Length: 390
Ligand code: HEM
Image (cartoon, rainbow, N blue to C red; front, side, top):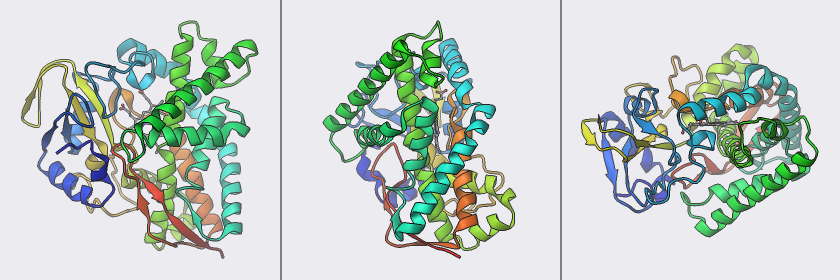
């Protein structure tokens, strides 16, 4: 079986497969297909954490997605933060981390609140809303564009490109459309860089260009990384909050009664939705994983979404339990590449959940949720909901 085949992930059948593999601490080989060189897969919380941990003999230089091709390594390897290792990776984390630090994220809070307020006002006026298409994507896109300094007028265009780019190899959309969209994103940022080179502003792109040890190419690929990282993940957890609220009577009332419950509810939404389904690494030395000897230079996929439902770590893993504690989910990854935007994502989801509780009486599904059909992004293609207002 080719575990990179996106058709495996559009139905609930994946949960049973993951449950069995996680419980067995399984390691499974997929022959070349979705990934030209084939790949190993691990599923349990323990094995995924081991692959991503600081001491593990793995590199990210070949990229971190299924599609690994030993003949054609990732062109951004060593330049883009998520595909860099060692000292270069540490330096990139330091530079980009300034824009996603605690004070930087705190400074964004009024912007996030304003956007959420605007979106909920729109929902009140609209009636039934497909939050997978209209609310989930808009907030993270607005926020990441604000961080990057993308003009508000370009947001919709840039967001459309990231959708087309990432509906690509792991989904049913055509590879050609995905490649075209990727190219357009790079062209767009190329133009933004040229404009900032001529006349620097006080935004992230200008600040990156001012770093002596970053080339123009590095600035470009890291803007791309932030855009994709910020856009393609958080939106599904935001949609997931509506789904969770519709299935968990009492969630909004609990938040209204005590906003202190929000952080745990947010963490659980991230675990429950697990938008980043997998990450890939390549071994740099021989090792034994889940009882299997693996040679150097072999790709291993850690299925984070499976680990986040490992029944040995999470009781009732399929249930959204807003007070789950402890909640050691791997939704943001683990180890040196743990998500740099986690603080920002948590803020967006928390503000949304709190505002929803403050303003709406209850959330109701107005149609069947449609899941994504991708080996990379787990979430919603469609989630029609109706809010009842007090
Ligand atoms: C890395 C998930 C939101 C920026 C990662 C990784 C995961 C992840 C699993 C690790 C990749 C690896 O190990 O190879 C998520 C989820 C999010 C989210 C589930 C939302 C719920 C964001 C946001 C941003 C962002 C909002 C920025 C605006 C990044 C960056 C990295 C990263 C820059 C690379 C870190 C590194 O390589 O050191 N994310 N992410 N992410 N994420 Fe996120």
